[in-house]
Length: 301
Length: 153
Picture 1 (cartoon, each protein chain N blue to C red):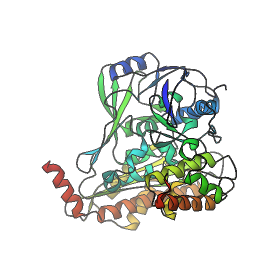
Picture 2 (picture 1 turned 180 degrees about the vertical axis):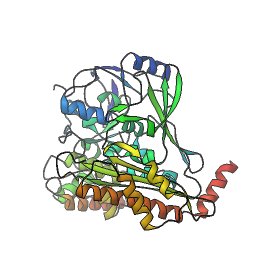
Picture 3 (picture 1 turned 90 degrees about the horizontal axis):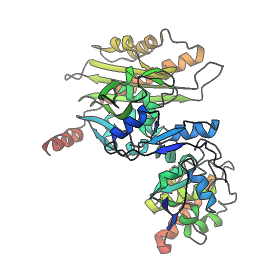
Picture 4 (picture 1 turned 120 degrees about the vertical axis):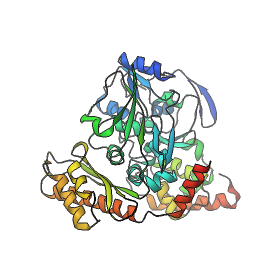
């Protein structure tokens, strides 16, 4: 039987030095391959030279902890995050976006970092990880550098990576003692040509030690071009007492200047407000003695 | 490339652009090559090292040195799962059934004391265009009962 995929050359580098050298020579890195194989099956075209990251040592780190943050290596499949207790409890936005990621048997194949690097406007993981202040570690010919997700995306399909660079992991700092996060999405909402097919929103709300006023918030919308944070809307929340009207106003402020109309605009506003409200509820309900005990036990080790 | 299919070790020459579904199909196994093109339908579901994946989106080389299981290996005729599916009329059409059998057998292997809700959740990656989910869930529960009373997997 003839293959559906166009032929290509295949390489399996065993370490990062080899991988970076191959990338510089024009080999395209592939992790889970879900997006790539889908595109190749649809179009019958693809890169001539592919390099698997599956055998590169050191890219399989996965560690989630409320104080030390969430670290996801380039080989980690999205499904790996689902049973992790700390991802579920303290990185709720990331957990919710992985829950709604894809069918379970596809989540077992696709990697988190691959989803970020595909740089597609309708992907969810960039939205939740950007709200959790995600940062990429990028390996290149002259060593590694850190790229925050906010500075990673240029346009759909275009990132801040140079051709010789490979993303090795994504890291989100710990959410703070009294912080909460949430992710929401609406699918299949296109009504007219030019409408986005999917909207997703993620937010975090962090309280200070007196647990009264918001000291920090992030707000991200995806689906309209590439995901982005809204600094002005986030600034409206800092130092304030939480209130539904405040979150609605912040959501409205975030949408200023976005090319959305009518129902889609109302849906985006509701999505942003709901993400903020749920992140806030989680931050307020956070005080969990079990978490504290587990953190202390972890530190004692 | 050396790998294990349904417990039998095989050695084959495989070009890198061959899909796992095409490879298994060539071996005479009923693995539809992801008719949806996206892997959303779950028809081409197989287990690689015990983990459900979509064979129609997997490059065959990914299975190198691993154990691949398909519906033929997980639910052969006469096994509790296959008999329960036949008795419930849940294997009437060949399109989604291989994937559903893989999902069902995997769920029962992980948890033989499966509840109805868990059985429904186990099938959430499988689309059946006949809408035959009710007999499929009933068949999973019937097979679970047989396995619990000592019928073996």
